[in-house]
Image (cartoon, rainbow over the protein chains, first blue to last red):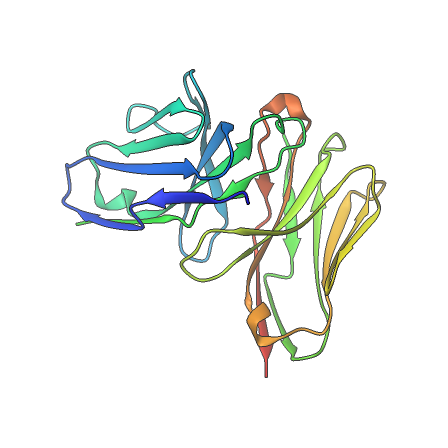
Length: 118
Length: 114
């Protein structure tokens, strides 16, 4: 149980294009999903909190117009990196909290998406 | 806000030995402390967690202890095996009204030598 998938697992794109990453909770519903960014040999940096049916909450320093988040259903959240540039190259990881567990704060992580911008 | 410090950053042990990773946190209101294992190129996997109303929790070769007074918690792995080699992250969760965020430590790269 508590499986989270991400698609694609890796993507290479040209500078200036947009890339969409999907995060799905496969066997549970998730009112809240989180998006993280991780650089090599570093910890996870929270980018934003995504709540189903409402606008995402972005962490300080994260450009909301560049990293568009949509949480249209209880099992799907998407992150779109708009006008990607080489500095956006990173490992993007989502996590999901099962509905009803917000007070207990459990999070289950997806396998991550490696983005490379040429 | 919450701040989590994790030590050591790297840890090398011989197969069969024990490994201990320690974390400290700053927000006394934090109430949930998970540990994650991350293998190269993969997402973090929850391996054990503990809540603030419990002092110790054990699951086979893995245990976690929590000292609320000192605001630190530790991961203990006994009888280590080469497949335990990975990066381990601790995390702390502030009180629930902050939206269920997790604040992560810096990570510990554990190497278990056969």
